[in-house]
Amino acid sequence: MSLPPVPPPPPPASRPLAGLSAIVTGAGRGLGRAEALELARLGAAVVVNDYGQPGRDGSGEASAAPAEEVAAEIRAAGGRAVAHLGDVADFETARALVGLAVREFGKLDVLVNNAGILRDRMVFSMSEDEWDSVVRVHLKGHFNTTRFAAAHWRERAKAGEDGVFGRIVNTSSEAYLAGSAGQPNYAAAKGGIVGLTTSSALALARYGVTVNAICPRARTRMTEDVFAGFAEPASEEELDPLAPEHVAPLVGYLAAPAAAGVNGQLFVVHGGMVAIVDRPRVAAKFDTAKDVFTYEELDALLTPHYAGRPAGETFGAAEVLSLKRG
Image (cartoon, rainbow, N blue to C red):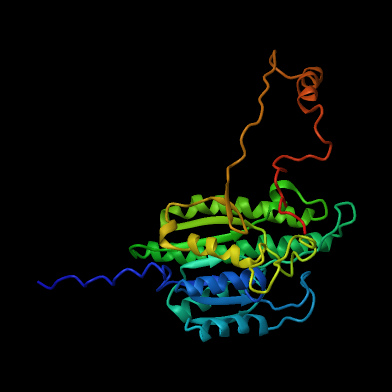
């Protein structure tokens, strides 16, 4: 009787993603670039996706250069990477992106959704296109790639493959948690991403897949005006407290086997801090004295409850952008 094959040794602690493959969207610059480099450093083969448009509002000609430069950087460091030029908000492009990872590396293990644009405007001035374009890139883009990655893992599990491994890390924002007056499109899309995350986490857990989301603070092309005036490093040797490199290690952890027990979670991460965001809790509860509330009863209960609070305060507004300004 022949003996079963000897399983390969586990990857060394310094390369927990060895043997795994990943897709990072919007990885040509900023946060996505830092995440792609970190996954590669941890041992993953990476598909670097970016549409390459120069404007943070999604304007300008698409270019393969940003994705190709990051892929080349990974290969120069001894890793494996391929570049992909494409708009993940396009359904068929997302299908092809997942297919590319499977063709190049044999399977897909990790999906990091990061691609996005900004078209800021107050809600009373926002155009239909400004709303639609931001929701399309952020929320639909996250859905598209999730849909095809999830189908890939489910098909493998249904085919009887043991130990299917899947990780999705989505990118939300504190604009969803506490509001952002000039970003109703962005805040709504980022809130939708949290809903997509928790729903997908429940649906895919049976297949060995976890789905989590992060709310990162990082100084990038997308946030250069948001963080204008916040403290910057005193010298080139000092790491910016808002550098994307502070965020990337959490993405690397959530992509790793060690995070198998982390599912459906939302994290705020920046500058040496990781906070786990709890799901909304009931802050106060009122019961009617009769069968049905009346206006007068609600007025007597709720008006005193909110008396004295700032008129513009929203739930969960505490501590957003609490970093010291320079």
